[in-house]
Structures are given as C-alpha cells and as structure tokens.
Image 1: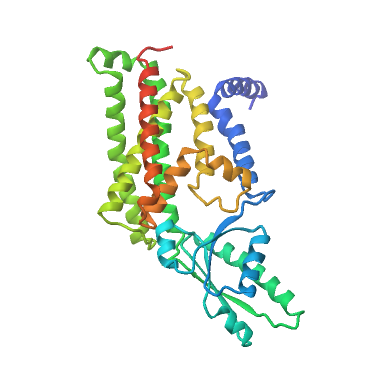
Image 2: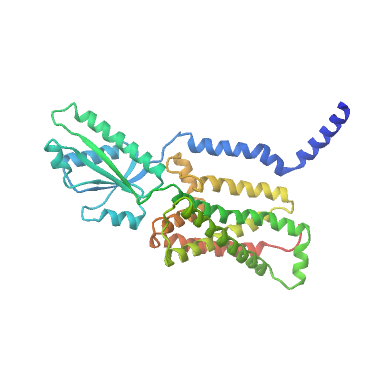
Length: 366
C-alpha cells in the first residue's frame, strides 16, 4: 500500500464529494435539521394546552369548583357545552378528542359521602388520550388533597372511556396517506430539471403537447398510483393491524376528492420548486427543505398535541396539516360536514397553484 496513491485518491474523492450538494445535504444538513426539529418538538420549552370539552350535568358550587380548577391549571382550554346536549353525538359531530362529563349524581354522591365520578370521553390517538387522562387525573388528585384538609370531605375519582377502538394505527393511516401525496411533490422536483437537461421537453414540444397537458397527464397517472398505494395502505391497516376506519360510499368519495386536491396542490409545488434550477442536486436541496418540515410538523408520524406552542402555530401554516386533519375527520370520525370548508380551500388553492405552475413552467432549459 502506497500512501501517495491513497492520498491522491483521497483528495480526488474529497473534491468530488464536496461538489455534490445532495451528498452534503444528507451528510451534514439533514441530521442538523432532524435534531433541530425533534429537539424543538420534544424540548417542552412551552406547552400548548389541548381543548377539553366539559358538560356539567350537576351544577353546584362543588362541580363548578372542579371546572374552575381545571381551567385555572392552564393545562386545558376548557370549552363548556349545555346540559341538554347529547355528549356522544357532540363528540361524533365535532371530532372531539377529549370531553369530560360531570354526571347528574356527582354533587349528591359527594354530599352523601360517596365518590364523585367524572368520565373522560372522546376519540383520539391512544398516546394523547393517555396523556390527557394522566394530566386530568393529576388535577383531580390535587383537588382531593386540598379537600382532605377541610371539614367537607371531597373525594373524586375518574374513569376513562376513549373512543371505540382507540388504536394508534387509526391515526397513522391518514398520516401515511398524506406522506404518499407529499412524495409526488418530491418526484416532480426531480423530473422537471432532469427532463430539461436531457432535452426531453424539447422533443415533447415538437409533438404538439402543451405544458398544461403534460402536467395534467402526470397528475392523472400519479393519482392512479396514489389510489393503488393508498388502497394497499388501508387494507394493511385494517386486516393486519385491526384499524377501525369509517368506510362507506360518502367517506371513500370524499377521501378521494381530498387526495385528488392534495395531489394537484403538492405536484404544483414540486413543479415550482423544480424551476429553481436545472441542476438536480440543487433542486433536491430545495425539495428537501420544503418536504421535511411538512413531514415532521404536519402530524404524519406523530401528533403535535404536546409539542411547544410555537411549533403548533407553525403547523397551522402548513398545507399538509389540513390535508391530514381532513382525512382523519373523514376516515376516523366519518365527519364530512366539519371539513367541507377545508376541502373547498384545498381545491381552490390547488387550482391557483396549478395555474401559476402552468404560467411559469417552460420547456426551455435555463
């Protein structure tokens, strides 16, 4: 072994490697982005309280004292609903993740020396449900401790009744569907500069194919592939992991409409990102900078319920967040009316971005 040859090739390889923007991105920038994202999500530097719907069927100074204690803790955003409201129907109609029922016999049981039961209901990710239960139980424990030092004996207990099945896979399926739609953006980011460099666009232009026709054909093919992959995802979720999804004609057609709108939106974003440069490595970096924040901050792999407040705020500006939330409402809750406005905005935004992409897109190489 000659060190001179090792040194010579080392220098050659180093120069070649450092010219590769994508290699530098995945070797250096990507790990930095990951640690910044996960560090920010799980740092716990600030807390965004989750919403807790409360129905007080036993209005009294004692029951309202419990409500005030929960509200003043700052751990929940308390939302009160009337006594005559059917709580189960309200949960189903509004996709409520956590609701606390103070039953009608709550006050009388306490004054008679019995237990004052409160019931936590809802339909949410089991991880979030468990965290909500533990947080609420901690508040009730503090109330019990304070009450034990008074002449009035106040004993509280809590029961949890979360959803129908409450399996985590129920929430991963819509998230992974969102990931498949997002991947179409990344595919287009590579396709545009590659076709330009290989002069394929020039050859296509001679055939009479227009820019909008080329984009539409790509989107239609991508839609068929998405339907295939998403059907497989749903089938695996149901038959392998026992996912409980609301599948009927209405929810399937609505989900297909959401997926189609998301496809047009993110494919248009991919085209616009691909127009930045004719160099695949350059647009790869641009695509990664767009894709990865949405992947981790939109609820694809885990909910952001307990993420810092500023990250929850950022997620509200990411289109993939609304795409996934719409699918969760439709597939997990069977609620179409609650996401109708989001679907309209998604389709409107897709049409606008598609028009912009067609306008700015050019067959010619930069």
